[in-house]
Structure formats: C-alpha cells, structure tokens
Length: 269
Picture 1: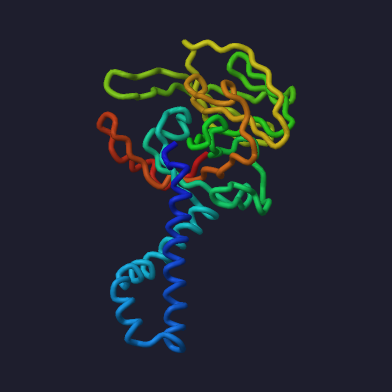
Picture 2: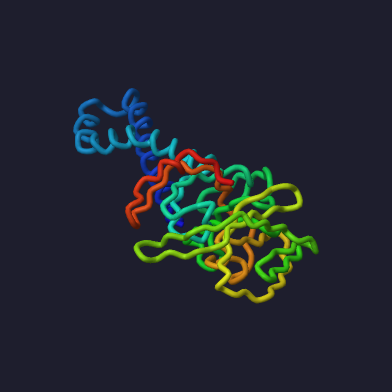
C-alpha cells in the first residue's frame, strides 16, 4: 500500500524541530525582558528571524497533522487488486488508528488497549517480512484459531465459513487485460459478511494453520490473486496499524476510468 512507513519518522522530526525553534524563541523573548540588551538581541535575531517565523507558522499545523495521523485516522492509497471487489486500485482510504489500541509513533508500541481485530475486519498492517511496506487484508483467523483452507473454502475451528455465489465479476487490468471471476458472499458465524472473488481456472492446495497467540491470519478478498497469510504466515499484533473503514476518493489512471464518483464517500464492507 502507498504510504511510506518512514513518513511518520519525518513528520515526528519536523514537529520536533519546529517545536524546538518555537520554544527557544519563547525563552529568548523572556530572557530579553530581563537579561539581554535590546541592541544585542536586534542584531542576533535579524539573521534568524525568518527561521523563527516559519517555525511559528508550521509548528501548529504539523502538530495537528501528527496527532490526527498518529492517533486518529491515517490515509492510504490502494496500489493493487488483491482486495477486489471490496477495494479497487486507486482507492484512497481512511484507517482508524485508535480502534485496536493507541500506539506510540515510530516505536509502534501499544500504550493503551482498546478493542481487538475481529473476523471480517479489513486491517492495515506493516508487512512482517519488510516492515517498511504496508499491507491491507481481511482478518479471517484470531489468536489460537485452527484454520483450514481447502477447495478455496475457509474453515475456522471446525466450522465452515459459508460462501454463496452472487454472480460474476470482471477484473479490468487495462486494455485487453480482463479476467472473468466468480463473485461470492462469504459469511462468518457471527453474521459478518463480505464479497470475495474466485477464479476457477486457478487451483489451490489444502493448507492447515494454527494461529499463534498475539497474531492474526489474514486473506485478500481476491483470493486467487493475493499475497497473504497462506504464503508468508501470520500478522503479529505489534505490526497492526488500524482498521480500514472509509473510501474518501477513488482515482484509477489505467484505462479511461479516471475519477470513480460512485466509490467516493463509501464505507468499507
């Protein structure tokens, strides 16, 4: 997913630098009233006044962006079709950063427990094998669950996750690149349901997993074209970023679609 993981570090650095300059300026003004002569202060500040002014202007803005992005919501862009039909290439989404607990930026250490990921949640996380890359998948297995993936159907703790055929779905990957797939609705025992895709031309082998404690098993909705827990394993709790919940814009530069007005301001199922 697009949203470089090191951007958080850059934002923290920018807030720290502008905040430090702003604070030093306040201290300087206080000292000026009691210690420093007006003549010396005028000569010294003349060379640095533009830096101070920029810091005073940008610090509040950067601080607000930092707080919102780190603890409330964070924007991401979908770069691949692994979550079709739920999310399309070019969707711009918002991710809830506090639902799964408050975490320290950069360190990614949870400091306040809130809720936990549940079956069917669309979750954004740092890829366990390259934490500079962000992934988005659907939660299918919780800590301690036994998962069986066979004949493209998921069984959780001995109970089959029902799949009902809804129709067909054409994956449009550009000019003369279209793939016909089956559109199904997958439903968990708790009533949560979502759409997934199967390509009958692609086979799958039986897989069995036991989800470790403090970890999650995730799958892409585009089941035959997704790099997920079936390939690389589980998502540790410390890698979680948040839950995707809203599409605020959608732009696909491939073909002639451009802005997809029908997808803007849509909740993520």
